[in-house]
Image (cartoon, rainbow, N blue to C red; front, side, top):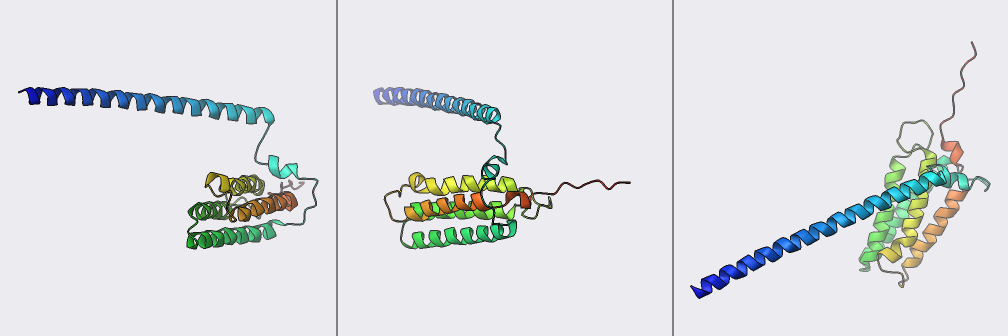
Length: 190
């Protein structure tokens, strides 16, 4: 009987501890969710005060010479996708999982945005050309942060990401973002 009583007491204590741990984890989850909600509101409010929208980044480079058309830009996006796929395969073959993952993430970002971009300004695809420019800046930041986020800053492969991020900024600055935007239609005079 003594063993049974000790076993029961142990089970009661274990159940009680599990319930306490569960409540503690639930509290932590709620605090994280609350903190993320506050951070989201803070960022949104800050962006609204700064008057940031999809055209902010492309328009920031409006005084730069524009020699990349929307069509050339679409081909450059294809090349960047291929570049990152190649880097990803090469790094995977060398056993560099962090660099490989970062490369495949960037390839997916460029390919996904490109497939949804309205390069011609027809309105047939959901991402307009200037929003694409803003998303290119996000991709450049992702490439530049890839070595940090995936733990290979001290490896030679990091240069492949830093170089492509710098290249992306040059492309953003040199692209004629207005050429890919829908033209305002003028009303015919009656």
